[in-house]
Image: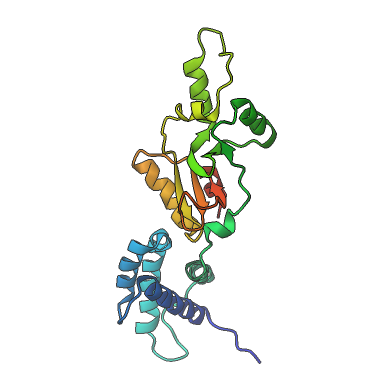
Length: 236
């Protein structure tokens, strides 16, 4: 007959697994108190930073359970089921974080620098895209967005007259407010690292319209996926 684990046992098992994961993250070679594992871990991992407050609270509860235990059968603090579910969830996320290459891998429609705006507008109408990776041959040249297209219209329309000559994506690129409105990332970073890149960009006044995924985050590598700010907001 299988004995059902108490909440305190489940909590301590998850806590100990998290301790091991934190040691792996910081590559600890010697014993280190849990709070120091968190201190060093948050410098290396977006996930540790995300759950720092939870981890510190778990450490306090763990101390209450372990240091005030009066017997094998009795613990002074029996964690609530919600707390146990939370630490087990964080244990799982820390040990097996989702990578952008897993979540956002897809075939990306790429464009050539001499493609016409008319072609792009047809794509917008049919597929509702808002970002367009632009290449010259195999060399990446920039990211055209619907904002850039709007800026081109606003600066080139004279009176009520629309220019007769259809522009190319080369022309539109020069109307992107922020010419470096993208960042290449490796398929092996976590979705939480991607979230932080977007946040840090905004904080530094350099908003990214998209993260472009390649094998190792190199522009010359094949484009494996694209992440927009809206995409990252939809991820739990």
